[in-house]
Length: 427
Image (cartoon, rainbow, N blue to C red; front, side, top):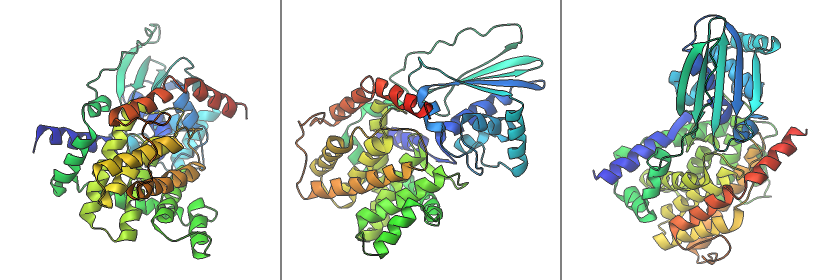
């Protein structure tokens, strides 16, 4: 295997992982659980500071296995029942007794939450105080990336944490060294056995989609009903919408089932895996074709996220995972490189700018939009209907196309991000 193939395979395996619950509150639970592993003595208090995107994405989303929402509960569950060995499934084993203990912690006002208003990019700081000492954990840039763990006695002040400048050789940025041609070559040539782990993502995300289809008023279920009533067509577009919406709604509602996440997001994983699975099912495509398309879709999603950031004011399901899925659909339907680029132009030139106003049940509607339009953009490109590649923010160059999108996110939409949070906090 070539060195480049080994590196891309490593990036795939690192960026695709099972997750239970929305990854933002889960990241806070993970930080608390990591801090708890280091402490001695009896808990006095837990202090949490997070950036605006972590805060925003955790306000209205349900913690898996419970009916509770928000970062304070996530922190409480991380302290009571967190297991860092389970990574993005850190609180998967919550029991009714754990829920009662967490509620008692909150009732006793043991947990304090604050917003880091001047912080950009994923940023979580947790300090646990006991009767003997205190410990601080910082997570930066990605959900499980513990940048520092510090312990001191109660009398000594922590020095202000200095955020180091991003290095271009981090996993998030290594992907930028590659081209669309590299991704296509990898997807075509990598031994199938090396990427068969992607099949686990299909099975995992289909399972939670089935759970979502059982929700009485779930958008996926109602869209499925509309298909049977003849109000919507039964085709690969609507199949993708139904599956993605159902899976997202189950996840956002507190399902205990895991999803296969990609690029740090469960909803991204749902969008990429189930959009492709829907097309493969409706067109009766081979498993190999589907698996290879998922390699391409995920790599392009990673590439986009390296420019737009882990979290931003834009809905990543639309401007990252949806775009990656669209490329995968063209690949599955035997499109050439120029047609894959056409699908990317169609996506960037149309649905860029869908805002992220936090994780919640309503994300299901955004996944329905992103997945359905991903399929349609692919089909339009295959038919020759492609947005002019110099229109607006679209650029004919693969890398510049997503540099433009990244610039639109940061610095372009920093003020928008703050405005979104301001509106949410007024309620």
